[in-house]
Length: 216
Image (cartoon, rainbow, N blue to C red; front, top):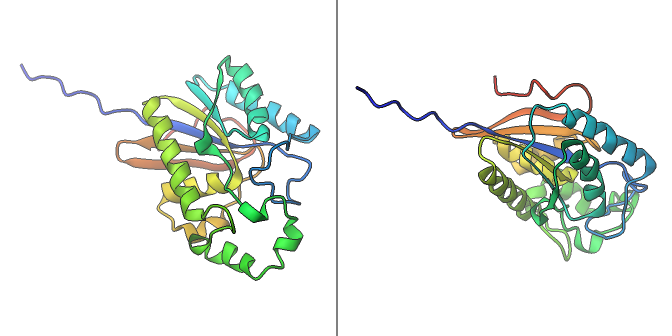
């Protein structure tokens, strides 16, 4: 009698959630500066995304960047799923170094800003991190999380640039094109990591049901 072959490993679904609105979203480059909390609108966004994720059949774990705005976004998701939120430094915002906290309108006037937009793989923030290092960090973090929850569903609350970098890697897109992606506050981006590689199921989803997310 032939021995039954073991079933192939299931995909691990990672839901990447950007944090909610803050008082300076779209105005300053907050980076890793402490003390930046969600605005009232951001709190409402976090509650709304928690309802969406709360409708899923299962969620196995919730992780968040250590920054306050990410942990405050993750908190209602944790309550909705009755799960503890684990902090993971791999989900941190890019380290913008000397540019941390600077107004975007001023940064946009710098000659280096063109490099940030068109050649990010060749740029390092003064006193901070390079985009390449950021991408390596977030991809390594997601590798750890999916290995810890094989076949499960993981929520990871992070920031716009790391999420864009993770999507670019999953799609096999060069980092120099990642600025073409838009990741809105409290949007959900879903990537299924399976034995044959990642499959991007949705990017920047800001409404509707997440229950039907699965590889086609």
